Image (spheres, rainbow, N blue to C red):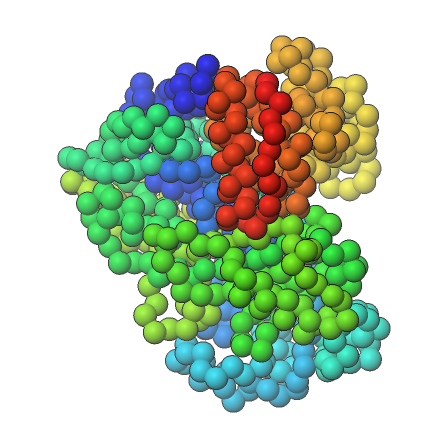
Length: 581
C-alpha cells in the first residue's frame, strides 16, 4: 500500500480528516508553536485540526540553536517581560521535559573591562547597532546581576560567577590567553528539539482522541467562503476544511500563508540564522561540556556548543526572504571559523570537519531599519477574518516560550469560542518526561522494571533517547509486538545504536512520510554526520517494507535525501547503489 493512500496506518489522521473535514479550530503550521497550541486546545476538549505543508518541525523550528534560554541579551533591548517569561519557562521545561531539557553551564569569555558602557544606553534607546562595541566585564556584570534576579528559580539555579584571567585560563586552558575574565552562568540545553515537538504532538493526539487530528505534508493553498483549501503534497488532491476559527502559526511564512488565503498581511520580517556541526574532539574537550557564549567582533552574539559528541557553532543574523530557501554559505562558514579562532586560537578547524550545516529563518516581526540583532524576540497575536471566519495570526515566538505562548494563544481562541479552560499546561509533563526517574536509583529501578528481556544497556539507551515513552519502543521490538510487526531488536548492520525494530516503529508510529522525515527529525543521524551510503540504503529498505514503497519509490526517496543533504546541509554522500527491498 502506498504511503499516499489516506488509509495508510501512519496517515490515519488524514483519512479521518477527509471523512470529517470540519473542526472548531484549524491550526495552520506545524512548528513548535503550532504543535503546542494544538496540544493545549486538545487538552481543553476542543475539536482541533493541525495541518503542516511539510513535515512536522521541518521549518524554522528545525533550525534552532538547541538552547532553552532566558535571553540575557534581551535585557539590553529592555524586554524585561520576555526575559522574565523566558527564565520561568526555561526552569519549567527542565522539570516537565527533563528527558530532553537539561541545565547547561554557559561561559562568556571577556576581553575588556569597560567597553560598551557608553554605547549601551544608546543601543537601548535607539535599537540601532551602529559601530560595534564589545561589551566589557562591567557591562556584562550588570547584565548578569539583573539576570540572576529573574533566573534563579528560588535559589535552585546558581548565581553567576566571575573569574579573572589566571583562574579563567586554569579553568579552560585552551581559551585565548588575551582574555581578561570569564563569566559563567546557567541556562539549559535542548539536545533533541524535534523530538520534544513530537512528544508535544503525541500528547495532543492522545488527549484529544477523535477530536484532535494532525496531518503533515498537507498545505493550505487557498480559501473560499470561509473554508480553507488544503492540498495533499503526495497525491496532489485538494479538499476544503471548515472551522469556527483559523489560527495561523506559519512562523516566518505567516504573510505568505495569509496571502494564499486571500488576506495579505505584512507582519513578518525574519532573519536568517545558520550553524555548522564539527567533528573535532579537541574542541569538544576544550569546552569541558560547557556552551561558550560570547560577542564576536561585529557585535553579534555567537556560540560554541558541545552537543552529541560534536561541536555546534553559530549563529548569524541576516535579513532573509521567506519565499526563498536559505542555506549556510561559505562566507558564514568562514565567519564561524574566525570566531572559533578568536576564542580557541590553538585549535585548528577546517571544512573537512564539518559533518552538517543548517540554516533557518527566525519568525521575527517586520523591523524596517532596526538592526537585526535588536529586533524583538517577543510575540504578538494579530486578528483578522477569512470570509467571516475569525483568524488569529501569530507574529514572533521562540522555542523557550512555546508553552506560555501556546497558553496565551489558546486562551484567545477559547474566549472567542466561549469555552472555559479546564486544564493548565503549567507543570504538566511532556511526553517521555512523565514519571522520569529523577536519580540513579530510580533510573536503575525503571530500567529493571521495563527491560522486557532486553539488556540493561539497551534499555538505558532507549530511555535516554525517548524518555519514559521508551516503553512504546520496547514493546514494539520485543515479544508480541515484534512478532506482530515482523521485526525485532536486531541492530542495524551499519549503525548498531539503532535496531531494525526501532526504525520500523518510528516509521509506523510517528507519521513518517518521506525518508528525510526519519533521518533528519525522528532521529539525529544526519545531524551528527552519522549517515553513510550503506546506512541510507539499509534504513530505506526498512521504511519501504513498512510503507509499501515499490523499488521506484524507494530509489526516489534515497535520491531525494542525497540531494537534500548535499544542497541544504553540505553533506556529500555521492551516488547510492541500492540493493532493493
